[in-house]
Image (cartoon, rainbow, N blue to C red):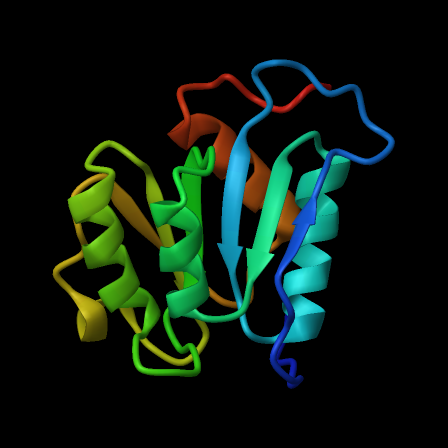
Length: 149
C-alpha cells in the first residue's frame, strides 16, 4: 500500500509495457501525479501488469497530452496538483473533450465530499491504496479489455 510520501515534481514520461506481452488492446493510462515516488510506484505496477502508462506531474501537462489526440483510455489523477488547475478541474475539462473516458480521482488529502460532485463516469479512490487494486479497477473501468496476464 502507498503511504504518505513526499517528493518533487515528476517529469513527463511515457512508459511502454516493458517486459510484458503487449497486445493491441493494451489499456493506455494517463497518470497525473506530482509525487515522484508515488508516480513511479504506480506506473511501474501498471506497466508490469501490461498497461501503457503516460506520466505527467501537472493538470496542464495532462490537458496538453489529451488535446494532442494521444491514445488515452483512462485518466488517473491526483486531486492535489501543482499549478493553476487541480485534478478535479482537470476531470471537468477532460470530460468536455472526451465524454466517455473513465476518470479516477485519487487523494490522500481530500475526501470525496470535498470534491463532489464528481464528473459522470468517474470514481474516487482514497490514498493509501494498493497499486494492484488499481490495476484491477482500471481493467474493469475500461470494459474488461484488461492487461495481459
